[in-house]
Each structure stands twice: as C-alpha cells, then as structure tokens.
Length: 399
Figure 1 (tube, rainbow, N blue to C red):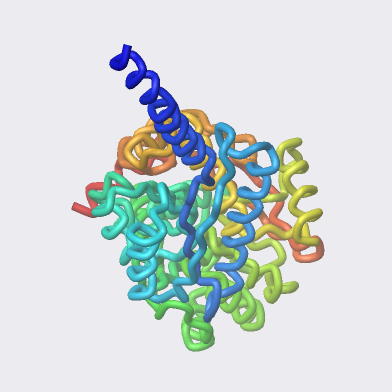
Figure 2: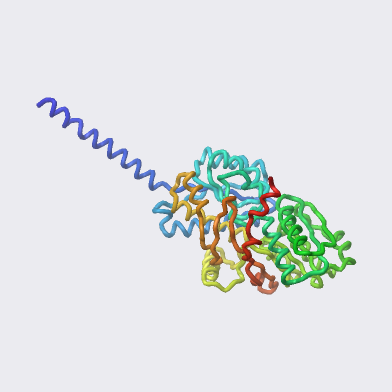
C-alpha cells in the first residue's frame, strides 16, 4: 500500500514536467522565424540600399499579414553594411553568432557580398543574394544562392539582342572596372565575337565614374552606331546625359544593363534617357495582372509606383526564400536543400524561374526601352533563349 501511495505522489511531478516540456516546445514553435538582412542603407549608394530594404520589409509585412510561414511570423534582423567589405563581414558574424538567424537575405552590392559570403558559408547559413551579380559570390559556396542574373549572362543577352535586332556595324563597349562590370563585359564581348560583331573601341573606367567627356570626345569621330555601357546607376546616367550633350546619342543607340533600373536613373536622367535600351532583371512596364497588382500594393505602401530593381528583386528573393522555408522547415540545412530544389517559382512578372546546380537562377530577362515622360521601361521582348540565359557556359572563366 505504501509503495502504491509513493507512486501516486510522483504522478503530479511527472505531469508537471511533461506539461512544462510541452509548453516550452509549443513556445519555441511559435517564436518568430529570424531572417537576417543587410544592405548599404547609408552612404554613397543609400538610395539603392534603402530600396532593397523597402522590398524586404514589404515582403515580410505581406507574409505576416497572411499568418506567417506555417503559422509562424517572420522577424527581419536588419543591418547597414555601408557598402563596406569589413562592415559586411562584421554583420555576417553578428547575424550568425549573436542573432542566430536561420537564413539571410542579401540586399547589397557585389563587393560586400563577396567579402561576407565565405562567413555565411562557413557557418552553414543559407543566403539569397537579391541582385549582386558577381560570380565569386556563389562560387564553391554551397550555402550561397543568387536570385538576380549572373553578370556574364546579362552581357550575353545584350549582345544577342543587338546582333539579332539592331544589326550594328560599329560597336563601342564601355566597362566598369570591378567584378560586376568585368563580368558583364566578358559575356558581352565573348558573345559579340561569336556573333560577328565589330567592336571598334573598348575602355575600362573606375567604379562609379561620373565624368565621361574625355572618352566621349574620343568616340565621336569614330561614329559608332551602338554604345554598350556597364556600371551602376550613376555611371549609366552620366554616360547617357553626357553622350546626349555631345551629340553621340540618339544617333547611336545606347544599351545599358540592370542598373538602369536604379532609382538614380529615374530621378536624374530626364530626357537624355529617352529611347535608351536596358537589359533588365526587373521591369514594371508590362501589362500583366500580377505586376499590375504588385504595383498597386507597392504604391499604397510607399506612395510611388516607381520600383527600382533593388526593391523588386529583393521582394522576389524574399518571397522565394519564404517558399523554401515553407517547404523545408527552419533548419538551415533543410532551407538550403529546399532552395536548391526550387523549380518553376513564379516571380512578380509572372515568369517561372528555377535554380541550377550552380545555385544560379535560370530565368528570362527583360529588354526594355525607356520612356522619359512616364519614367518607365516599356518591354521590347523577353530574353528567354535557353542557350543565352543559361549560366553554365560561363563557369569555365572562373576556374
């Protein structure tokens, strides 16, 4: 009898322990899912970094308004890398060691992204890079993924479009001298040579160069009919404006790349942007229900229907990361696996995109012409030729 009584006295303690364990487990399941984010929110490119931040916040607000991911809200842990490589490295350690995020959304440029990527890979925390396009960011780093388009592929698309549609006789290639600019130039020049393009002049210039008059003075007597330029928004805007002042444009056609969709282009290029062609990862000038709905929601939230590519790409990258977490759960290795298995994910344009084994996106890109009055790129065509948009052929240049 005494033995039986002792057993009864132990029951409440067992029940209490089970109850506490269950409560702790339930609480843990209901904790928010912490996702890191970094971008250049202050400094020289703060306009771009804040557009990326807006895209990330918008995506988080929308997913949380729908109940979160599998019933758990998302918490964005944000840092400013100031476009500084050392700061990006410091942020990487903070996010992985102190904040214990399960994944990271990268809203920064190629330089900070390349510096921070080895840290995240070593810590085995999956990262989705929204728009930075240098190959080295993802090379040999199984936890690093890119949402944007590889720089070399952008160049190849520009060359293919020019030779098919414009059929230029004299081509100029102006190249920003950094990993991003060199990548686009590599894809551009190699493809132009393959297609028989006649490049009459090539020139490297420093990152974020603003003064192109000496180069343009050299170009004018060469009488080119097509000028390609790689670089960030301020660079492309400067080429377009100064080239128009010099009388090179619109006689010659201008083709730039994804950073024509930066906010600085919309805010400062004015009439000099008219008719310029962009090879774009994100374009709002399409009449598709999904994009129209997105623009309405964006304008309701931020008071403008101008969405720079940093904002649009970061929004889509976040949505795709949320989808991977929904499918794989919150364990970082499971998220990595789910990202790699991403197939036919529908982006804001309504296009279906998939990851390659290289953790690069296999995706169409837009080719658009700028309307300076409406401040929008109108779609000319989608670049969707599998041979041109495939990132695999460019891996050999990075061995």
